[in-house]
Every structure is written in structure tokens, then in C-alpha cells.
Image 1: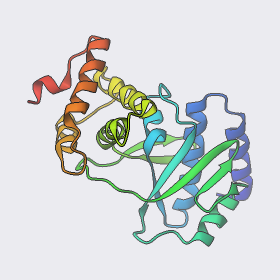
Image 2: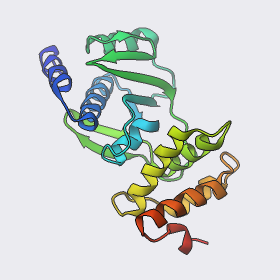
Image 3: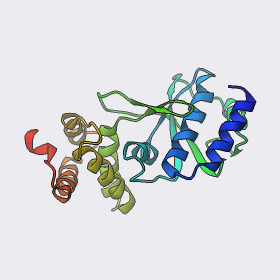
Length: 209
């Protein structure tokens, strides 16, 4: 991508009024630039939940982790790539086009389901799998102390899944939630059941006992 095209893309991101689309545009632009350097990134945390829920949950920033290579991205290279976007800050958090982009290190996942891919304006965006996102948010909503924001994120993600707008492997959700890594299944089951009742939808755990 030439610097002229990058500048045009940045103007587009800056003018975008839809918060979800703005985040998608920025995530795809950042991912595309790192991809040209042989580095693949994945959108994680609240940012991924925002994309899965079509903006029903809004993160307000773009959280990214590194998939490949297996060695950390050199700090100089991070600054050079983000410099192409006229970013301010670093070496792990930058301001770009009025938003914050955080590069959080190597991705951590216990899930057997693969990452998802989203076609975005400036290239493919890789997303953390929703099964682990849901279980992770439920855990954060409870420990080390109650966290209303994490509970809200988990609820929005569960709502997208039980309403049929998002494909979710509920067997994998159960496995992850019961695993030694999380040990959060009762709380996960409670939240999903509550969301299903509110939406008058089928509780996906009822057929997975």
C-alpha cells in the first residue's frame, strides 16, 4: 500500500461516523500494513466482541494481538509501521485517526475452534474465536471482583449467538468454561440462560447436558 493510499484511508477512517465501521476500517488498515511485513494480527477482547455484535457492544478502541511470527515484533518495527499511519505514542498503544490502537503481545488461546475472518474495507481482519471471548468475559466479570463492563460485553456476545446472528460452538463453550484454565461454567451457564430468557430464545445449554 502506497503512502498516498494510506493517507486516503486515514481520511476515510477519520470521517467515518459509524463507530463500529470506523473500528473495522482502522483494524483492517493496521492489519494490512503489518501483514506486508509478514506479521499476522488478530483482533481480541472487547474490540472483537464489537465486531461480532455489529456494534451492539462498543469497545472504543482496537485491541490486537500477534499470531505470527512466534517471536515478538521488534519495537523499532512497531514504531515504523505505525508511523506510516501518523500514529502518536507507542510502543504498545497509539492514537490513530482519533482512536486508540493497542498491540498486546502474542495471542493466548485455549480453544479448539479456529479464528474467524471478517472482510473489511482495507483487507481481511482476523478475529479471536467467539467461544473463548465469551468464556473469558464471563471470568473477568466475576474475578477478581464483579466487573459490570465485562458482564455487559459477555451478555451482548451471548445475545448475538442465541438470537442466531452469530454462529457459536456451545459444546466448545462448555468445554472451555469447565477447563482448568477458566473453571467458570456455572456462571457462564447462568448468564447465557438469563440472556436466552430475556430474548425468549432457546437456551443452547439445554441440549448440551
